[in-house]
Amino acid sequence: MNNSKIWLSSPHMGGSEQKFVSEAFDTNWVAPLGPNVNGLEKDLENYLGNECHVGALSSGTAAIHLGLILLGVQAGDEVLCQSMTFSASANPILYLGAIPVFVDSEIDTWNLCPLALEEAIVDRIATGKTPKAIIAVHLYGVPYKINEIRTIADKYGIPILEDSAEALGSSYKGQRCGTFGDVGVLSFNGNKIITTSGGGAIVTSTAAIKDKAVFYATQSRDNAPHYQHSEIGYNYRMSNICAGIGRGQMEVLDDHVGLRRKMNAFYVDLFKDIAAVTVFTAPNDDYFANYWLSAIVIEPNQEGIDREALRLAFEQSNIESRPLWKPMHLQPIFKQYPYYGTKVAETLFEKGLCLPSGSNLTDEERERIKQVVFSFFKTK
Ligand SMILES: *Cc1c(COP(=O)(O)O)cnc(C)c1O
Image (tube, rainbow, N blue to C red):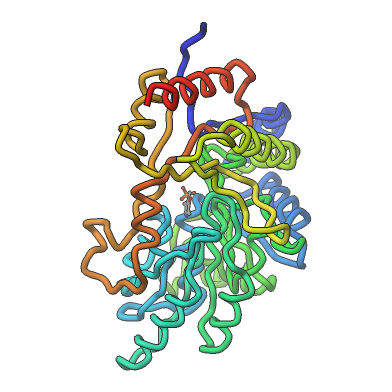
């Protein structure tokens, strides 16, 4: 049997990416602007709906950085951030000299806990400072509690930066993720549901805000014949070559969502008789998840079943799996910052494992995964 590496999530080309890239070469649009950049932005606006405006950028991290700037975050400000996430959600807070305040997850969606969020806001206000923004994440493509988080944000007048890096193709009550925040963020890194080989986008509610983001992303050039600058600029625009890959990928996005959801259903079926394992699924039909990554929670027992033992069993068969995101409040770089909540995120981290979830996995690869699971749980 073929023993080649099975990845958690790898790039999956659709077929027409090279056509768009060739066009860029043929017309010499080899620059961080051009028809593919405009085309990808249009494709995304049509896909996301809700009259949004999209600016294509060099990464999701860049989009979060510019998003925080657009929301007015400055040095010394406090920014509330979901603790259980990838570090890219939180690092841009530090780029700005602002202070992250981390918040626990709830158990239904693994995202921002409304109770802990409100507790944090009330406490920060009591100490004299109203937080400047809330960074809410749709972890593994499962939407956060949209209504609850929005209600709290509005009650205290704090804008939401919606980190939808993992959730392109997900929706809540029929509305696409990426369009719920005051600013939204997408990522097209190599491991995401679609890729531009590296890239991201900012999603805004008006053309004016999008234009401002693009202005910052292209060195903040004032309107003058010479290079004139009155604000700090960044080099964050997406290249026309990368955008060409993105245009091809947009043609297969819905297929990819369907295939990732099929992987999730495969795991639900695979673990249905294994009591120690729960597959992470959306709480109800209002939530439509792209299941960018499928994840499970493993209850450890005396017989040697636990998260790490299963991870090692996969590794032995050359299959990649990975613990869930380690919460930011437990990370060395962030440990001095405030945290609100209990141990929900921490417990998920201890027991949770992400499994191969790519849209390009084959029947043979699913069979290899199955064999590891069967022999692991039989011998324990
Ligand atoms: C991937 C990711 C990002 C960062 O996106 P890049 O394009 O890799 O910079 C941000 N937040 C989350 C939750 C992510 O998964």
